[in-house]
Amino acid sequence: MRGPVVVLGDTLLDRDVEGVVNRLCPDSPVPVLDETAASDRPGGAGLAAVFAAAQGAEVVLVTALADDAGGARLSALLAAAGVQVYPLALPGATPEKIRLRARGRVLLRHDRGGPSGEPGPPSDEVLRVIRSASAVLVSDYGRGVARQPALRDALAATRAPVVWDPHPRGPAAIPGVHLATPNESEVRELVPALPGASRLATASRGAQGLRRRWRAGAVAVTLGGDGALLCHAGSTPLVVPTPGSAEGDTCGAGDRFAAAASLALAQGALVSEAVQAAVAEASAYVAGGGVAAALPAPSVSARSAPVLRTPQSRTGSGRMSSGVLGPGGERVGVAAVATLLGEMRAAGGTVVATGGCFDLLHAGHVATLQAARQLGDCLIVCVNSDASVAGLKGPDRPVMSEGDRSRLLAALSCVDAVLIFDEPTPEAALSWLRPDIWVKGGDYATGGGDNTATLPEAEVLRRWGGNTVVVPYLDGRSTTDMIVRSVGERTR
Image (cartoon, rainbow, N blue to C red; front, side, top):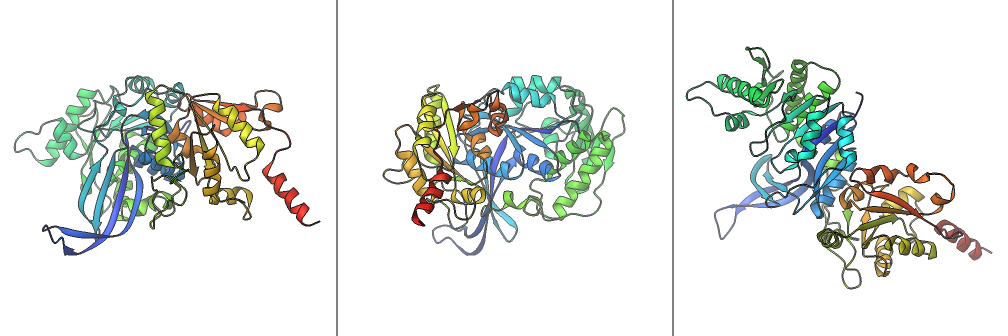
């Protein structure tokens, strides 16, 4: 593949709540679910991107993220799965789908997040990555990303094969897509069936109707456990059966099908070959246990997935808490940062962010923070968690806990909010924050030349049009040196 596989569309936060039912509610004849476990994962376009990344492909996800705890959680989960997120602004709340399950069966699905807001415009870097793609998968969930005019223009102009996974509430596919992948129910909504027509006749008529309407190269209608029906330029459709019977949880099977077809096309397969590969992948996915068995462990397990969080906010299941600290610490945590982001963006303010371990806060840190705050209207500090610091600097660090470090930073007048992250790098935090400016302090600016181009954060900031800058560092200030000197003085 000459470039990344780009997945474009709406991302949701999916949560499965597992439990047992052994009684009815006393005030209403409904079952009571006693929760035993819960797990979060990206849904919608995010799930398709995770599937593609799990196959070893370089995957870029162009999606909209909200300034709330759900958006922060999605950023962390996607980063853990190896997906490069190119975020757009999303007004309102993160859409969530919560499935209440017992003994492998879904009892109820609870949707929240409200009406979809209009996603913000893409940056030049988003348009560039679409131009460089080896294949593009549009995973439309009807919430607006696939309608964005600049994105549609970029999709129409790309030479890469485009796979369009449509939604009845979404827009029409751009003219000339290589492959559209609706399921049976979507086809029936988009192209009304003739009375008394058979299943295959309805699927074939719908596929040919969509192919002509969208001027698509081919349309593959997925038929659940019976495979898929492919219609292209010829008058006779191709039926691709499943390799064997597959029963189980079909949640995500359509996303798996579309992702597999996109990867095959990126590798040069014919459309018919791509559909056959996709049927085999989706069938194996369902037979193998569905989404819980298919995703990499960090994306399935809420306990093990990294999070953006408030100090000491982990619940018994390890899920992220959006609560904030008490007196003196109200500016720490996801909820506090989300509130600040909403206020800043509503007022058109400039968001500045910086990050680090900040173990043993010293004058060099303060100088960097003060200089950073002068560059915009607010300063958000991203702080490595205790686990992250230990991974970077060894088991004897940090000297101070994440709670103490975040409280000290929040007490500084130049700091407006503090966010703690578990990963070795702040990429997931930055993808959610989308700061206008990212500030690095230290000797980056003293070596001559354009050293900022080598900073890993610079590439991330370009995804939404942000900028990375460095500010001078006070010589002779180093946490490690302070620790060494302190230990040396005590051992004299």
